[in-house]
Amino acid sequence: MLEQIEGSKAMARVIALCRPQVICAYPITPQTHIVEGLGDLVREGALQNCEFINVESEFAALSVAIGSSAAGARSYTATASQGLLFMAEAVYNAAGLGLPIVMTLGNRAIGAPINIWNDHSDAMALRESGWFQLFAETNQEAADLHVIAFRLAEELSVPVMVCVDGFVLTHAMERVDIPTQQQVDAYLPPYEPVQVLDPADPISIGAMVGPDAFTEVRYLQYYKQQTAFDLIEDLAAEFSESFGRASGGLLRDYHCGDAELAVVAMGSVNGTIKDVIDELRAEGMSIGLVTLVTFRPFPTRALQQVLAGAKHVLVIDRSLDPGMGGPLASNVDLALRNLLSPPAIHSAIAGLGGRPITKASLHRLFMQAMEKPWEGPNFVDLNEKVVGRELHRRARARRSGPAAENVLKILETERAAAFQARIETAE
Image (cartoon, one colour):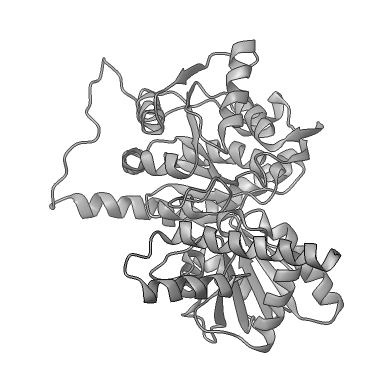
């Protein structure tokens, strides 16, 4: 049923329909409304046979989920940003143990400096942890992906991270089609764990593994991810047939059939990109879009198939590897370099720390990619004047202070000068 609802509340409602048996909750912006919503559903009795556990930290949240999943319970948790980093040891443990935990990641920038707004720094920081990572474009997809995630996690016995843009989706009011319990039950069967702790049949998990077997254990983890592509597509097709709408899968293409320039991006920015592509195609530009839904495992073959005819590929990252550039761009470059005629890869870094990615900025970026491509990452809407002043300060003074505080001072000075100029003009 269609409802006008906050994204976090919609996700909470759909997660509850998946019948989790243990929910481990610790609040951190911007995912807090999700676990609050689930807590309300447990308290009201709408979600039954579920233990809602308030823990003392993010590390404890995933640690408890590891224990409950190993004991045979369908387990769920959520986090964001520094919370994900705080539970990093447990993130790797969950993957190494092959536990089918589902976790919502309310994507948010990682400090320092402190920033609570959206980018993909947190997901990218742990992209090699062994979790599947699915990225939602809309709140409808954010809700739907959780149903798919539980099914995927339990069929393969792997942990799955549903990545949802903080604030842009989590706190946005949109129309979302909330499925019925019968629909979810028909798609997601009762949980039958592959491994379970049983006092009658005692085992140990998390054993010490030496050099003689560690490579083989890691290879099996790699093998499981590399053989998951068909299942991911099959689950998306089954979801579409059962629920009457497309969601999930490896990727989606938009006007890529004849595109000379193809844009690749993840998350909510794809909606704005589509609007700009529609405008540019109306002006005669041959441009298309690939929306990546599954980032881990990385869908190399599917990406090669859809981008085989493109001359230029522009990858938009909402995170930054300071020593390299855009993590997504690096993955796309690696995936496409073995094509017979590989396209030129152009990297753009946009939306860091929640900076708006506007249609005007994208329009300029796409035109530049067609007319005057660049080397290295292009930092969209970078204030080069502020950067130049800070670099000049650092060249003059050894004890120049933290960059974040200095940049804020420069911006404050510029804003004060601009405000004074407006006053003088008005007079």
